[in-house]
Length: 141
View 1 (cartoon, rainbow, N blue to C red):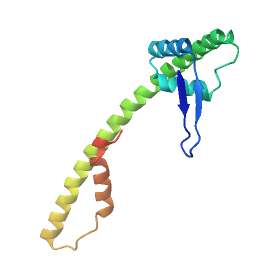
View 2: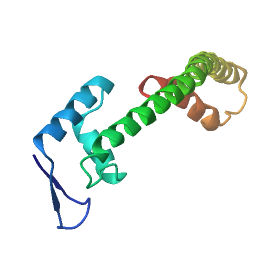
View 3: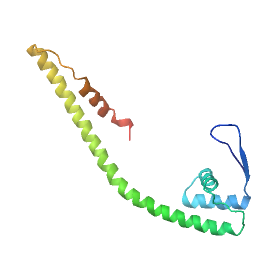
View 4: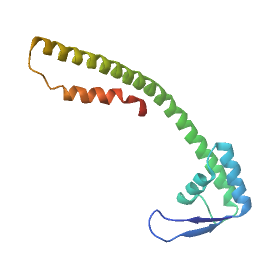
């Protein structure tokens, strides 16, 4: 298998030859650990996991498996910390959206009452910017 790597800028490129059996092993590992093959090859090339010694490949794969297991553990730990934060932040955002709706209604009522009482108009542009910010919550995460 030939892999050609191009830089983000420039015209140079480098071509690597990977034996088919090694590429198949990478493919199997990618399926097992749910990686894309392109991403795995990129990680292997960037972090120097390949050695010229053919016997080192097995130790390299074992080392990679141990590192993946360690990273999986870290991932689950971070996921455990992140999930409650995401849940809490979603409900805080929904509260902010609800308050923005209430504030919008109060500003409209205030404008109507000022008009009826003949009082001068006030500038609510700053509050209206915040209202628009919180009411456009749907597209962001």
